Image 1 (cartoon, rainbow, N blue to C red):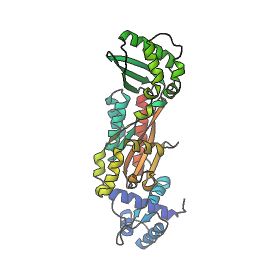
Image 2 (tube, rainbow, N blue to C red):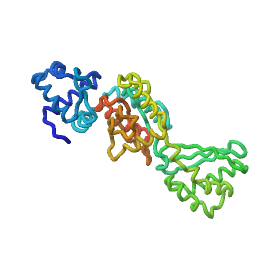
Image 3 (spheres, rainbow, N blue to C red):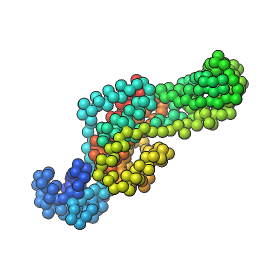
Length: 341
């Protein structure tokens, strides 16, 4: 960290928070007037010049005040911001809204993305859990037609995935149930990733069930258990972005919309910015995708049994970082608690 004096830290903190609140460049005169500073406007102006030389703030126009740079935001986030808690009414509303949805995990996550967008007034994103990290509970085989069968895979976290099987042989309901029972006996308690890698060996010398269907599971395992393709996300609050002055510039809005429309890019991006920290903040040019250079992302993990996912808020760099952190932290904890209970 570049060394800052106590006064420089204080002035930088005020500049960031005033700019976040107003979306207008901050002048020394306005700082002194608004915060009733005990130092003169000239002294504040000199501090601002030093901060600009160090790269923490910049002057968008000659006659304008200053705004934070990406580095200025980073110093603020790492050293200067305060993270509080949502107030009691907000916490109660989040909990009640998520409880009312259902016990279906995916519906809870979809509702969570909407809540994130509403409470942040920005864009909320909830990445679905890594299904392949789940522990297999059981599967069901449901007859649809003579040669079409619905495969339902359940894991302990409560997540369910369905696949339509197109079989080249007919099979009765009784034999389907018997085959499902045999498969469940062999696979119960394994990680789904383990099943994909070893199902061929685990189903060898098996007795019971329909032999052709057993062989189908052995030979089609790579496709049946290809959980990477089942990754996805829910979003809420896209309209909120349109209300932010930063996105009145068409190119910025186009970049963001293009990014959001690419499912693979969205998932890969959120995966790439994660680390062992519970909460991560990526600012402007720190984002690996250039389409998000005008944005910041606040993300947090949630846990459902053995599987994990990510929730995040995306908005302009000019966001209330402390509040966004408190939102994602509370929502992620609430998702985890509801899913567990």
